[in-house]
Length: 216
Image (cartoon, rainbow, N blue to C red; front, side):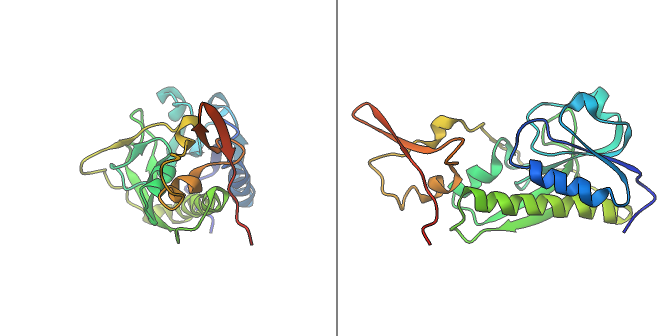
């Protein structure tokens, strides 16, 4: 449903993120009723009503944020707990199967804006990297659509409670411990990417790569 409240929507993906195909799908969807554009650099964000910042790695300046009435980020944690980097991966490693997802207003303080929408991403514990990424992309699209279509009825809430932060994950975080079983490290194997940050172990000073996929 189109609402006259909004006319122009920008979607920013500032890197070659896995989210890019989902961002393109959103542009196609919104373009039926709104002026909608995908940009790859924050400087190209147009003056408008709403800007979705998806998978972004750069902090957006307040000057650029002021180009739109609302600047929105999807973050997969129960904010203010779990601010920071790679919340999906960290929670999967922790053994979580119900991952909270928030649509929040972007502010100068990272992951600290008001929460517009909440949802939960349910996992069964078997999903590998590409599979849970797909679910993450789908819930991102759903929240973005819901915000645009239900905006007049939405009321944001201020984050309350104790805050915590996840650290940035690096390729070194994909290292397996050869003294632990596969069962003990299965959740770590679920978050590695065979192409970008594969699992590996080191034995006798030699580094070995391990790839994981379903064997149906």
